Length: 380
Image 1 (cartoon, one colour):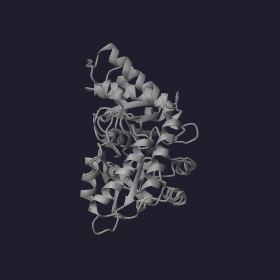
Image 2 (cartoon, rainbow, N blue to C red; image 1 turned 90 degrees about the vertical axis):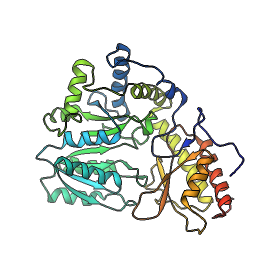
Image 3 (cartoon, rainbow, N blue to C red; image 1 turned 180 degrees about the horizontal axis):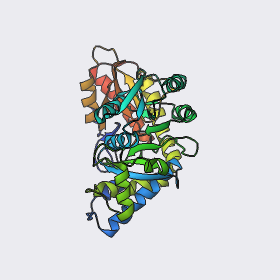
Image 4 (tube, rainbow, N blue to C red; image 1 turned 30 degrees about the horizontal axis):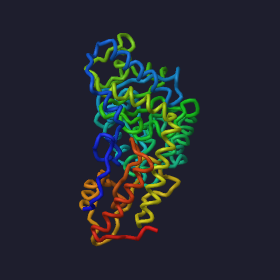
């Protein structure tokens, strides 16, 4: 192992180059050291501020409301699908990774009809194919798409798909879990009924609260659709609107952390500012790893600056677990791959990470390869 002092966050923790949980700022962590009752006026004010500012992220003030849902991001996805797709509805699910497949599973368990348009993890859905499927099947009421599919890091063509869905008079539901707050999504220009995201990921809070930004008129039409008590978005919104209270115990500390994280998000310049930092992180990562001989799964045109998938080298001395452990010892945590098309691993660009951190990571990878005797290429 290198004698270099391991990299760490401001609180001495390893840097998380993963799709989440992520490295957070010290101030976000410190926001969680206080206790509030769920009916405390101060907490109610914090929660209200969070919910009121979230629609600004998609430029949806006035037309959209934020409906929080206790739990991980998948809780919000399930709440969105099972609240918005009615019992006699049918969803077209666009799949090019694990999270599209998960949406199909949610619909199956809920007893909702669905059809899948699936491409491999490195291929985005083709709007022309969606156009043909909607034209051929009048029973389809909703289309589900993942904005950035974390399985590979691919950026899917939400804007082009939304235009096709709108032209056919159908409804679009978006999983923006790993894109929200970093990739632009303008509700004034892109037609959709709801978008789901979470306190984690690009807002740089901590896990524990999902939320759905719902078009007000569309949310009103969901009454009676939900298949579960806890994941009923209509009922959750009604309770919060009438009393300011969650129906069930809220994650107080997570919401307080998100309040602080949102202040930092806006101070950085919102989606544009945060997206620029992540794009620079991704540029340093991809170029640096390229100099060491690593190849990305995706071409630049499809790569979102969220998480980058690298092909596992075919070097006899490259063993991923050794690689992972050595990087962890140097203060960097990465993520294994989960593709069917190639043997890969993933490195995240999001969270409280900056250009110097990404450069330090590339240097740690070089040292690790030398230690393993698996040098692929000497950096220029």
